[in-house]
Image (tube, rainbow, N blue to C red):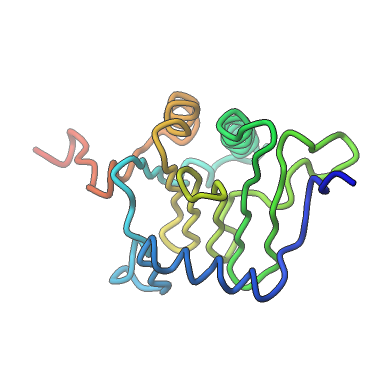
Length: 176
């Protein structure tokens, strides 16, 4: 029997994956600016502010962001590959994007939007993915292939990069 498109992660695997994530990304959760960005962002990463979504009454920007990131994750995942969906303190999943069909609603098990908790979508080998930070209100896109897939769309949709490769982006108005 073929594996399901969406599987719930159970213990002890759930715990092992979070431990691995904590180690690899030096995850340090916290609600204060002193702990932000909460992970050691990889060299190949871009972090966008989600502030442009604040005035998004019809959710057009949110929908465009979600569609762009989902399409990028799908494009970067091999046909038989899997993604991990880690939602801090909630049910976590392993998904097979290329097996997801119209019967799965929503199309993904969880949005990458940080909705009060950290939200992480990662390749099984942690080589690319996203990290949504609820209190900093950002999304970090990791891995060169995924950045190449989504950068233009996120620049148009979210408007403002906060960090590149873990280094703050200085906007021209900040240098005056």
